[in-house]
Image (cartoon, rainbow, N blue to C red; front, side, top):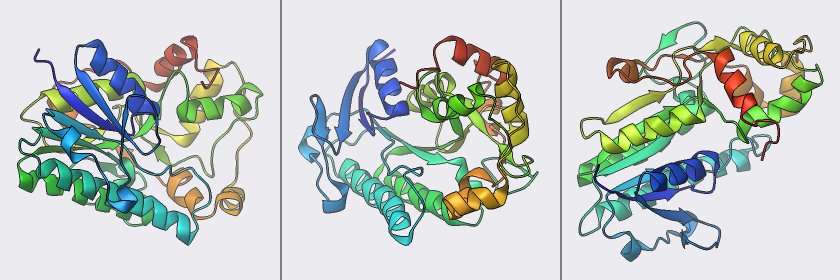
Length: 305
């Protein structure tokens, strides 16, 4: 396989750090682009429109993961503005800068989220489904529109709509473990809302497929084929831990504590099908939830490190 020179934004995060290591392990050269000064990282400041454009010459590909955390706190007007600005400004700056290079990279793989589809109840949605309503849906649409603009500059653009990413260490699973280990886990609200998930191992393989496959472009749902309801998720995690899952959190309590974020991130139902991956014959390492949780917990999810 041809060795690639790949730029990654957000390379210090859960997905970015793992992807950088995976690409380097297969022989690719990885350039990291970040806002925080650290060794081996190029600096950029999307808010001020600053990016080291000259250092980007000679890239084969770019992966864009950067964006303010959705779980940083209650979504005040200021927080929502920062969530939107961090994605729109950053993606626009990156797309414009890559497109203006003397030799632009062949592909831009940009993260998005299944929040694109909004709250859809029991409806099964695929890449061809229209966007939903609400803040997260609008955020994902704006994010994707900025990334897709790079296609007019000759780049192949792949927009990965990520589900809930489960990792052996860190991420949302590590945050859920303490209450579940104490027997204090349970469903959110009714528990009937659908959760679309994927393990980090499969996410990395999807990113590599997007980088390597010249015919792949547009939206791609990065989720496992086995979507589950929130209650099924809680029961599976509790069962793997040999604990009960009886301490449900009522919707009013979640709304009191988290405001709008509760409705959009915890109580919304999004049942996503990875149709394009399945049509390509992509083989998931972790297609079913409970075996995936068993494998992840066995490999060290307890620490959250």
